[in-house]
Image 1 (spheres, rainbow, N blue to C red):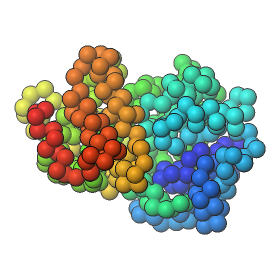
Image 2 (tube, helix red, strand yellow):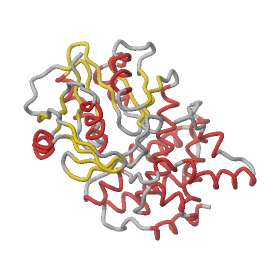
Image 3 (tube, rainbow, N blue to C red):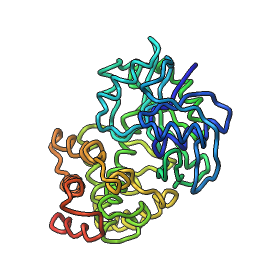
Length: 339
């Protein structure tokens, strides 16, 4: 099968490097000429927790003439409908898209190409793009930390699932999820809590988990995500062997204290991760807040579950984009009236 990675951002660079390192032949398709030039001249460069460079083949999306069996989608969700319409032209008649994006993008994809050609993978590791073609792996490099939770958006297994699993297994451990929405939701929970507060405070996942004031907000964001999922009858799946609901959900004061203490330990392997939303804010470009915390808020409204802490994260991040605020731990004070 012929496949491509669409999007040479932080995750796309790292995934491409791992696949190339193991002898895979594929294309990286991107819309930025500088990214394509850097990748073709210098290779896919990985820094941080792993250090290596691999030769890759990159092509502009305006110049590719190939038709692919599978396209792995790794762009931001902003303008996703236009992106999906564009890349669907690069698919074979029975070709499929596997999205590795944050949030819950599968429905939008399925509306364009059909549920039987739509797959998703919740990514359990993180990276920060340093330059065109250069990305820092911020999660531990062991396979048990470089995980993917994969599923088909159709009711059946899907014709391309085995090949998707084979490809992603080259880099890390892959779990095929029958309850794919539950696997997606646990990643949404983590992104809402840790990416959300990483953006709000301007720090890493580990930094906001260690700081007790921001950790209080993280705990409440997680609680909202769990409560919304329960109301929507979504069973949240474990991630990397950890059952987040059992570990961090609470009802009484004692379990709430235990939950609070566990949060920094739960994110330890990914403590250096810097939210992609924060990276976008620092570059002065729109971020995915409405596709992350905003999705929790939307589900909350639908199922009549209040989400004041997620709402506040969305509000604060939009104020970054309008220039009214800047990422800082001082923003934690904006949550005080919600407790």
